[in-house]
Image 1 (cartoon, rainbow, N blue to C red):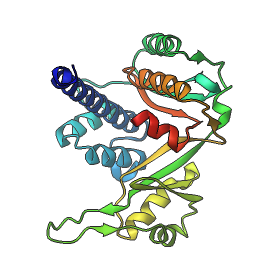
Image 2: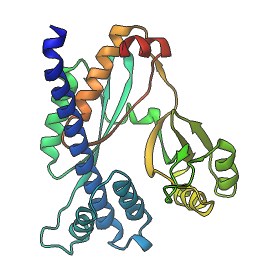
Image 3: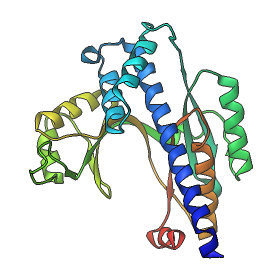
Length: 262
């Protein structure tokens, strides 16, 4: 049976990847439109728009799409749009706190779709503010550890934590988190642009500069079954059309993650 279903499985995985990529493109375009609406269509005078455009380019969004999004957001195009930023709150299996950010042109649709995704997958809709207090809003600048040079023949450059500490020492970065293939430079919201500029001034390329919600503490996951239910819930929420980002505070042991991957 495994051999028989292999092609169907491959097609399903490709469809899922394509769908997520399409949703990512849509969210990146929305962020550009919102940034242009709030701060104007000039990236030079609008750091939020600048970072939204850079992130879109990093994810291979075509320049024509980016330009049209800037025009729509700033009202310069004939198809100008307006999105609202809305946050929803929920609890998942094991009491995991979940914060859901949306960009939507239809509040009722978003509220309905998110409620269905939560309740159908074992979550609970939370009262406003009960989950938000678990998270702090921070600036997060992501930098790849291995950076490919513009010149094809040149060797890749490896970025170290010390490189970033030296680059951002005057920019009030709070901490640097070591991820699998990226470093996350955490700062206060008001300091994020200066941190990003300090990284660039040091000749280091950055992947993204975003405002994100960082949990103040984590919630331990006690079983593989609980982890499976939680991840299915988070996937269902992320699949909702208007969802831009999902934040949660679970702590899943490495051995449990390995068992899930297996």
